[in-house]
Amino acid sequence: MNAVVVVVVVVAKGFVNGSKARASWVLMKAQTGAADPTWNFKGKFLVSKQGVISVPNADLMASVAALM
Image 1 (cartoon, one colour):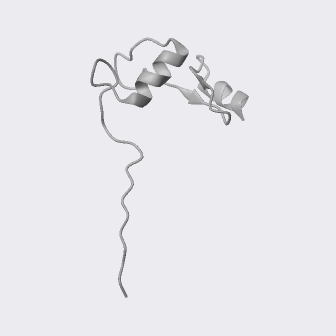
Image 2: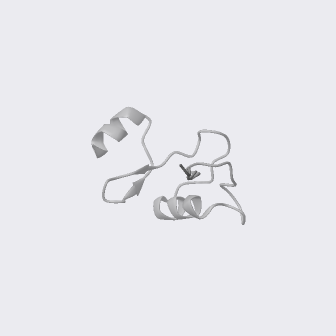
């Protein structure tokens, strides 16, 4: 039997600021007006089922629950 191996990278290390920033980060920052992240976990975005991108408030769990 022949086996087929498929590798899909969903998340990978990359730039989030500057000219080398990944397109997804550029889009999310542009649509929300969010500032550039300065350190790990400072750049959080939520995407609703309808594709609307938002920045969660201080209560992350409440922000997620509001989108459910």
